[in-house]
Image (tube, rainbow, N blue to C red; front, side):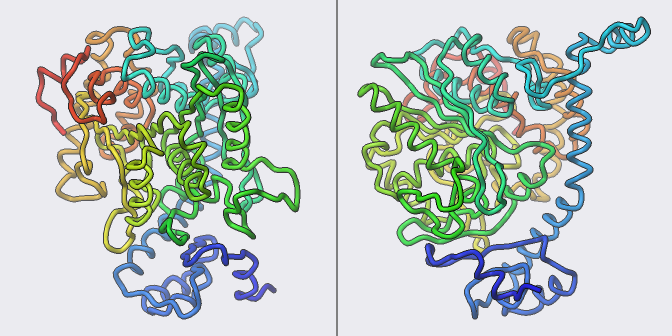
Length: 496
């Protein structure tokens, strides 16, 4: 049997100044009860903190509820993954046979039915069936202030797909240069858990842009959802407290943390931060005028903003000077107030230009982990907030910042009903490209009482960037005025 102290020492934490790491899989009923009623939390098996750490009741209560939620998510992990795989296979089978009627006809007549190949460029994820759009909006050209946000959200959406689909989209639909797709290693989970890809536009010109897109939270992967709600953190001198799960996904080393130059002792794995950094250096060296953009949706958004954060932490000023923008969509909170100030300093020193954190309406993920005096997680930077009429504006804080509020229950339900109605008329208002898929409409019906889930899905974020005013992303987001094809944003009052 492994001693508790030896087990905790197996992961070296000398690289940070403080830490709190939660392991729900180690939490037993007695341990949870003792945690709730004892301020000396160091003795609990599922809590890894410096020896002698004590905690008052309020934060213990929040951690208790969070750990319970994580335990429940772990319990449904296998059936949810099985359900997701079954749904994905079924949707692809229907897609390859046109529709259910053709599928039945093929079965009755004995004709060959296409068997979905997960590595094929024609194979789609469940999220892709929520939004089948692959092409960029032809009405948003390079030079338009909405171009980079729109390109970024499309890249963040496509990041959920397999390598063949991504490469086909980049080369055949966007007419750009596909660079690489990666399955990044997680040193803590000892498996590849993070995905991302790189592509570039206008290669070898003054306007060359290299785009890095990280994959976000997979809807049927409970480990991703556990990471989103986890309250574990590491604290670094000068940097502040940062979400532990996101750091691990980005490539933090179990023994050495964040060494500037990675020395791989146990194998040649690809770690997200280090692999992307070296690839960018290689590409940027070929063109002095080239710059790069980082993007991601959900968990991918957290990784997208942490990437330049670690660059700054390592003093990679020359690389940050080539950064053209960071565009995140539905990004969860990643650090505390000190971390936010560290990043604001980078913004003020022009080392983090064009950081836009886009939030659509009642999306639940940007509202976790909670922002309060107990958890200390906080957002920073420019927030481009869109209501359910796709009217965008910049805000210091989104409405209902922590989501779970009794006062907002009825307004959120009313808004969900409106979004369901809207899903049937969008195509008539803005054109067929905005028509919602049946699966997205079904999700809105199922989640009428919990609208934060469909609000987190890519379709509303894609629509938001397309229908945004030209000024929102163009002048630091200081105005909502400007050209827009969104009549609802100018003629109707928002519900939420």
